[in-house]
Length: 335
Image (cartoon, rainbow, N blue to C red; front, side):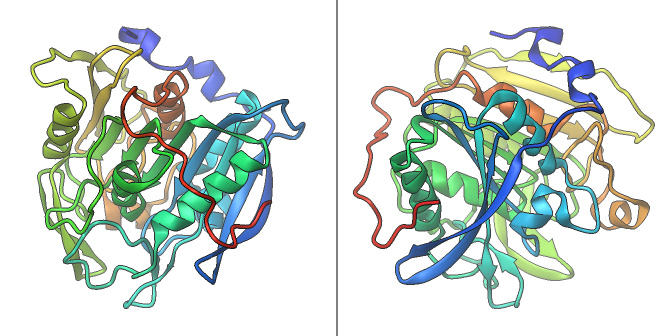
């Protein structure tokens, strides 16, 4: 198990200014008769054989393109472009559809979320995975998910209901639904939770999620979400290893990571950003003052996507976790 400074990638690697970004390919796939969009990120030189695949899920109001850095503000999730090139992996940034509020999002497990789109987003994720596996690109044993906000809550749904099940997920600024519409049986999945204690949208201790003054359903707290997965993964009573990130800026935050379980088995990590807001920590991609006023302080002590990849890279499906390969979705496209 990683300990102390071995738990994080070297800062020199994270801050390399001459890193080459992977290539983005806008693609579509037909899911249950409906056209769905996603962006496939590939290394500049296609690697041999099947490689790990990371699904990236944007937040409510966001887009796949914004998540990969095409918006007006820098996106910490865009670090996946350099990770994909460096590690020779594939990344698929999925595009959510509009809900009742006219804004893009995901049909996560919140049964009391009136604005959530009512589309089968589990089928979308599974369809993209299946098409890439059958194209010989994605390794079905190394499927991972990283989501932000609404996308984070959706990542838990994929952990519960998608086949093949992801080997691990990373959820930033989003926890599990209090009133859940999910029907999947919980199987062991490794889970990384990244959450700020002063999150004004998805409260760290749980409660009503509020976006632009509107209630969008209720969620459990970060620690309750951790406890759920500790139970599912058989890690209750395990003493965690604690790692405090060196403080690198003047943003007023501090970050601490609690790791439960060994690297080679199911593992749960809770990365708490003290005084942090509704935003991914990042060493390089910093939001401006107006955004910080709306969502709270952003930690500059770590790169969220790099932490997720460190967590993902050695993970494979847990034996007996029901990681079966379901039949090919109808009309699934091949990129």
